[in-house]
Length: 428
Picture 1 (cartoon, one colour):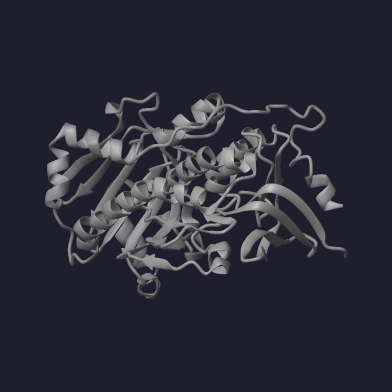
Picture 2 (cartoon, helix red, strand yellow):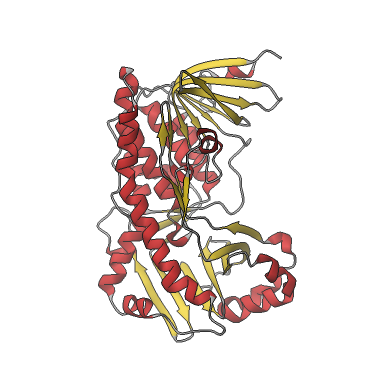
């Protein structure tokens, strides 16, 4: 089989929120872009699906507000935590000065399909599914593209002036570039599972705290998506204690949903997320840039992962589109992206680490159900602090603005669902 090669201005590796958004915005700016996604579709269970007001604002500016509304979703306007001494509201988004005063819980695969479909309306966008990147192409000490393995085992070389690594916390691009990562650690892992949601259940985002464990219940309309927070590395001990003990723990701590515990009948229903909090010390080398989880893995605290990734993509395209089109892109341009996104990344991770120590660590080390820690009690008594927490969660530090409008916006009438103008040629 003859290897296939294609040229473009930007090769994006990874079809998650950072990668697809970067591809859409680059194509919108008139930059030719190929996005390589290793899976055939975006359907992965228990992917992050908390879309914050800052991201909803970006989507609105792109004219996608109505499309988001058509996706299956739930709106969450506040967050609460329940301890032995009561329930405390810890975040209020209704006080935001924003068009979107809520979190939208949207299945990530639906969001990504919508973004990819919109991106396909630009003739400079190509999405290649089932193409796993296995290596980078280098010339003269510079990255000039990537090599991907296709669905039939064929090899495709995508040559590009810039390669963006948006391939997640286990980034192949970061490994190939040899970029070091600073690990900050986390005191917990997360067990994801589902239980039925009934019409008379309370709505929203709720956290329940018990002896050495926490359960966060996310309202997904037809079911509760539950995150069981356990001590780091503790999954084997949980399994060794038995499924009955796990069900009993859930029923005791989340007493509102105690009758749903019987729905947990097999360990296969429970997926383990090993929590990472880290960031790359450098985000770029000549010809390559990291964004999203490839540059900085976030804790699930606050559900900010999607939103930091999208903000990275927005900033990167706004700063890089002009030099890309002018053919003058250099390392100084890539460093601008890192500097622009450094404060939001460091600030958000610092906040997450403080919460891990002040709240999560204390909860997981408690031998019995405990009262709310002082910071939670203070926030729970102050509507102003609840609003501030809502802003920190929903808007974050330094929200990004979408760059100038599209240079091209041509709907391909012959096949609006096609991957892109080059995709058919690449698959021959």
